[in-house]
Image 1 (tube, rainbow, N blue to C red):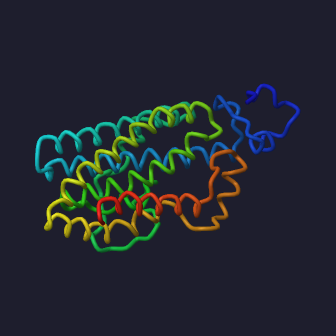
Image 2 (image 1 turned 45 degrees about the vertical axis):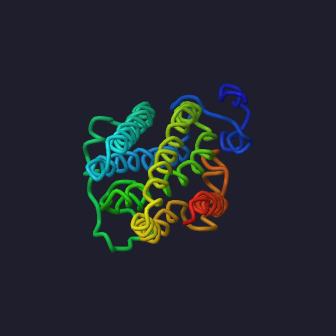
Image 3 (image 1 turned 180 degrees about the vertical axis):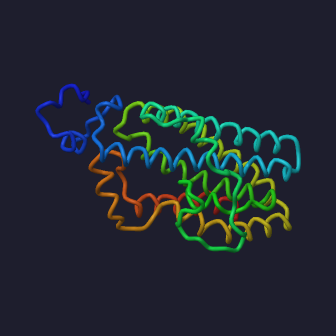
Amino acid sequence: MADTTNTDSMNIEDYLAQGGVLTAPGNAPARYRGELMRLMSSFVDSELAASAGFAGSINFAPGIKERIAASRITLEKADHAERVLGIMADFGTDADRYQAQHDWTARVERNVDIGAARQGGDMRLAVFHYPIESWADAVVMNVLQGLATGIQMADLTQVSYAPLAEVFRAIAPREARHAELGFEGLQKIASAPEGKTAVEQALAYWKPRVATTFGVAGSGRFDTLRKFGLRHAPNEVLSAQWRQAVAERLGALGL
């Protein structure tokens, strides 16, 4: 793809719609900048909230191997947030102030249903407002959200802001590994009759909540994001891919 230095004779939105990329903050028009910052804020806030949630689940772990896995996820999600926050800093965000302005451990009551609504002033996905209450709970949530993240990352690695796309491409394999760690834990739990019951209860709780991370079908904002090269596949396509992946992976475990 050509760089933005070759777009003087082309409207920037037309350039982006045709697959062009931007490489520096100074090249970003105001509307594009706003949507890009919103995308990055949602990712950073979700990773920080996820990290905080898994930190709290470390002591649920039944053994050392599981504690290491939860600790790794806690560490790497915080690292992913820091990497994207570094891109936001290029646009003028005060990174130190940003990461300290919300309580990333804050959660709603367990049985409250907030749908896809934002809560508490930050931009985390709604699923990260719910509490994790057991090891089976943590593992199931990680598996379902890990599959969702993997599908979403395939879209995010193609974003039109090149420095961010590069960061997402570095992050994607680690996020995929988080999901695989979850499957290892899920197999172990589900192999015991009482464990399988706990898993099925957790699946009933988390599946509809993770499903909201894909947004609504026919989203009006999608056309704007696609025009800017910040999204490529519609919400309903990503959601269908996730549901298929969930059915295949859980079906293999008899769930």
